[in-house]
Every structure is written in structure tokens, then in C-alpha cells.
Length: 214
Ligand code: AMP
Image 1 (cartoon, rainbow, N blue to C red):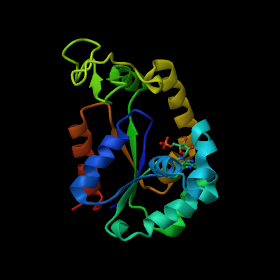
Image 2 (cartoon, rainbow, N blue to C red; image 1 turned 90 degrees about the horizontal axis):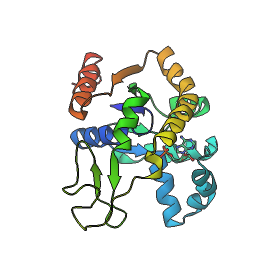
Image 3 (cartoon, rainbow, N blue to C red; image 1 turned 135 degrees about the vertical axis):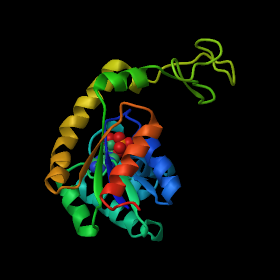
């Protein structure tokens, strides 16, 4: 099961990837996570990509492609993998085709308003990191962390205007990639404006229909 996951920030891609990754024993490979880890560890690679990542700019293709090539050659990728955040350019998509054969590109979709509703209700505790949602996982006392009693805050990234801007940037970046996989007949579109279990069940069914999952 060699999959590419595509979807706007806040759609829950990370959640879906981690559920499938555990269920089928295949790694979830997020290039963004790899870069953040390398930066935190202060490695050579981390130093090279730090400025790009911190400014939200694309890391040059040759660096990203090399990182993914290395990662896909690890033994845990034999049974398959879920790529998240890669490819982001046509050059990366073509390079991926040279490395391996992708079974499907999964496009998770939801109207931007749904994403805004989801993420704008999210509250985090700045002290202990606990995460809440005003609608789905409210704290016992409004605005106060159940765990440590601190005042809960909204992340800057979760503000509606920021979510809207990131959605626009996502569309600009990924439209050519989406078209690339659609033309190859590899695109599977999934409605993600519903509960995670339903999203996963629908995805599994579509993978079975295509003989990717047994
Ligand atoms: P993400 O967590 O996927 O939003 O990635 C965080 C940051 O890592 C991006 O803003 C880019 O700076 C960098 N990055 C991650 N994946 C790629 C990629 N495929 N191509 C170029 N830059 C990337």
C-alpha cells in the first residue's frame, strides 16, 4: 500500500495517516515532521532547511527528493508507506515516480468553512499541552485546563484568517499535483467533512475496490 496523502492544513490528514499506519503496519512519512526533527536536533540537514521551514518557504527540490529517497529505502517501507506533504512540486512528483510505484494519491476534501469550524474551536493549554475543542471536547470549566488549571489559548495557526490564508496557499501549491495524479488515474477523492471513522471506512472501501487493500 504505497499512498500519497493530499489535503489542506487542518483537515485531519495526520489523524487519518496515524490510524492507517498503526492498523496496517506501514510508516507515516511526513516531510514536514522530518525537517522539524532535524532542525530540533541541529543536524547538517536541519541547518540547511531551517530558514526555509521557519519562513514557510518550500525547501529546494533536490534536498527534499534526497531525503525521501533515503527514507523510502529503509526496510520498514517494504510493505508500503503513507507520504504526507510530499510531493509538493511536479519535479518532486516525477522524482517519486522514478523511485517507486505509487498505488494511489488520496485527496481529502472539505469546504474551508468546515475546516475553520473544526480548528477555530480548538484550545490548547500553553503549560501542559492538553488539547480541547469547545464543541467536541470541552474543558470542564470554560477556558480552563482540566489537567493543570491554566488559562487555555487558541494557537495562532488556528485563527480563521490564518486558516483561510493557508488554505489558499495549499490550493495554489497542490492543484498541479492533484491534476498530475488525476491524469494518471491514481487520484482517490475522499469527503473529509465527517467523523474520522467514516472517512477511514470510506477510504478503505475505495482502496479495496481498486485492489490496493485486501
Ligand atoms: P508541513 O508540515 O507539511 O506543512 O511542512 C512544513 C515545512 O516543511 C514547509 O512549510 C516547507 O518549508 C517544508 N516542506 C515540507 N515538505 C516539503 C516538500 N515536499 N517540499 C518542499 N518543502 C517542504
